[in-house]
Amino acid sequence: MENNYTPVKEDFRFLPRRDSVDDARFASTDYWKNVARQFAKDKFALLGAALIVFVIVFAIFAPLLSFYEYDEIVAITDATGAEVVAKSLSPQFAGGTTGYFSDKTFLFGTDDMGRDLWTRTWHGARVSLLIAFVAILIDMIIGMSYGLISGYFGGVCDNLMQRFIEIIGCIPTLVIISVLAIFMTKGIGLVIAALLITEWIGMSKIARAECLKLKEREYVLASRTLGAGNFHIMFKQILPNIVGPVITQVMFSIPVAIFTEAFLSFVGVGIVLPQCSVGSLIEAGFNNITILPYQIMPPIFVLAFLMLGFNLVGDGLRRALSPKIGDV
Image 1 (cartoon, rainbow, N blue to C red):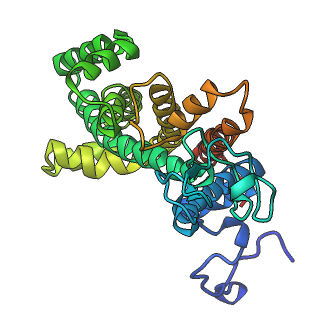
Image 2 (cartoon, rainbow, N blue to C red):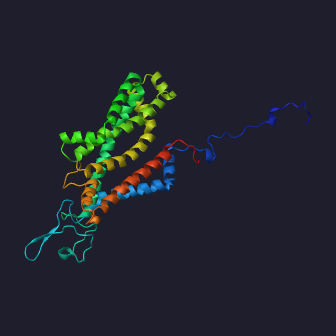
Image 3 (cartoon, one colour):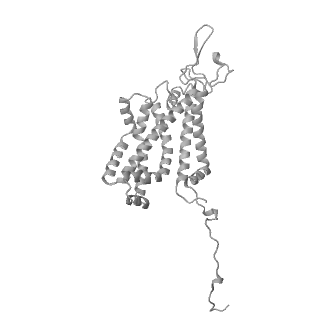
């Protein structure tokens, strides 16, 4: 071929049109599917999820399948007509040798009032979970709204709202609980109120930090240019993009709420007898720990499973939701 050759039309041909990418390595992956895949690879997160499911299932169904109510005092009448109460029985199956109650089953034994600890333990776990989930749900709504408003408007509004948070955060939790105990009766309402006052602050700080980072992004500026209102931008444009950090914070806040409820019940300002929670059961078992150590073990293990499970799931979600380049 000569160097001065001039190309002609016949020397070229069109390649066939490619409407899709055939290489699977470059196929797009849905964000939440990728999060679920990363979470499923985390063995510790799956262990935490299994512990949570285990406790929740038993908290729902174990009291329903029990032969006794959580506040029922188990008693029988002997041959002489006297009432015998099953006080402080060690764990036993039917067919044992515990006097009049050898034909009854108490998997966790009974307390010093003659109530079945199996039923009370799982009913207490149900109460603790209910308090934690209700309190955290309300705290999430309050904290996210407060943080979004503070971070979005900024300036004087942000300064005033952050000073208010600093004032609330400086008050010790025990002082808040003591004040509430003066005006409120002991029980679930007092515990939820104490959690509502203190637990929303962390959520608001995360929402504010994310809002400060996202409010200057191009899609927010475009929405504002097209005439979108402030609340539309906050709750329609910014809020969906901070779901990841919020979910992670919720997973870490739930065990804190459960532990706080257990602490309040332990010091005597929480659940009132005959109602029970994990904390009140630990408090009752602690009073008899030297002579009846088996009474404190079930609620302690339930609390440990919940704390460990939610912390492992929170760590797993934080790793799965963090922006990183994973295997495609």
